[in-house]
Image: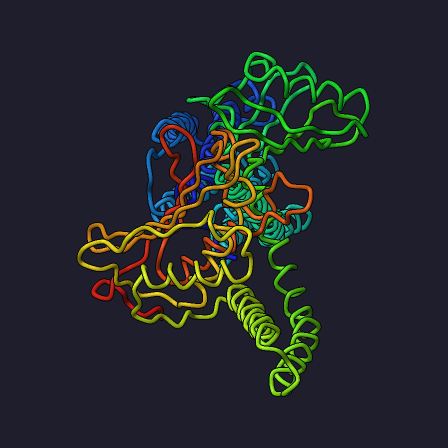
Amino acid sequence: MPLPADNPVAPGTHLRRELYFFNLYRLLAAAVLGLLLMGPMGTLLGEPTHPRLAMGLGLAYIGFALAMLLRQPKGVQAERRLQRRVLRGVAVDIAVAMVAIWLLPYSTATIAMLLLFGVAAAAVLLPLREGMAMAALAALALSMQTVWAAIETGLDAGSVLQRLLFALGYGAAALLAWSLAQSNRESHDLALQQGLQLENLAHLNELVIRRMRTGVLLVDGNGRIRLANEAALALLDADIAPQGVRLADISPALAQQVTRWRQSRNAPQQPVNMGEDAVEVLPRIVQLQAGDDAALVFLDDAEQVSRRAETISLAAMGRFSASLAHEIRNPLAAIQYATQLLQESTDIREADRHLLNIVRQQCQRTNAIIDSVLGMARRERASPQRLDLWQQAQRFARDHATIQPDLADHLTVADAPTGGTAAMADPEQLQQVLAILVGNAMTHGRQPDAPPRVRLQMGTERGEAWLEVVDRGPGIPPARIDRLFQPFNTTSEHGTGLGLYIARELCRANQGQLEYRPVPGGGSCFRIRLPSGDTFKLLS
């Protein structure tokens, strides 16, 4: 994997650092060579053949080494430019070493050894070909100097062999130094690459945690917050990250749960109310790592958790409805068939025939309800028709009076408004919505020791038609209004809590809305809002 484009290491950084140490070594070698050429060490090892030249060479080389050290390149420079500086410096080192060997023939081994380390250091800084070229140049220069010295002064065989071994050693030292440097650079690049990958991974983890919808808190053993993502800040109602703040100062109830969890890891974790106007959260506390007192607290919005549970429950209900529909339809078909046979009999009285007609109608309605529930579970499209809401209300009232004659007088229909109440809706689904709303009103919308009074009224408003089911009961407590249309929300021991939810979904399937409106003076009003024929658009 190549290094990222935003590599923080500038080109040539490592080469400049190595060049600095190489120049520092050159200054040290120049000081040693100066002592040999001008100091007492030269006297001990032998006087130079040309003292004035030796002094000038020593001073010049020390000045050159000092200038190379002080003129260390700064800023971003190309690697090739830095390598050219190395080549020039090594060429001067070789030339100075050869002249110094000629001036101090008894110090040949010392000077050759100084040059050996210089050649090896140069191989570290240069590519293999150029490093070996410098080693070959040093070996060639030493060999030529050896031949010249042998002709001029007559060297013995031991001195010649010693110099030739040094010449061969330059190549071996350069190759070994380059190999070690190359291995070190590869290891350094690999470590740098892995470090960048770990840094990018840390940034990615931080971004993921920060953007999580679940709140994340890291609480240390002293109860102080060390980490909080954006979701946790929203749930805690904090404007800034509360790093270092005690959790008890923000949410005492949550801090108590963390304390109980530390005392007993099996302690139940209860929902926590973050304030009067704040949301209720569900904490989940886990240990960060073994032997650590830090606690990782996950915070979930209790309402969202409830919605996810409802979604799962509704999905299960949809699958259950599909299998249950077959079991219900079979007896319904048998009842309807038996009713039809009884109606064809000539021995049935007219009053009984009317009752059989009611049974047949209710079988058909029950079958239509099953189709509506299955259609809602499968998100099937409604079959809207242009209809008049007042006529639909009258039809429902007649059917209701037939089914429940003892409650016939408790359901009234308002007069048809001027201008009509045309709307687009599936008539069967609309009848099912009315059955749910009127059934709830008859059961719950009555004052104590008083019969129910339910009224159906309709009208139009801003291009929409509406149909209301109004009762004169005690109304719905404000605390329950927000959860009124949630599934499985019921206060009755015998209810399922699905009626209002199904009614709202059926209204949505018809591009309408179902909303609750409190009635001044007592009572409840459920308004069905449906599009008129001009505003209705077929669902895709």
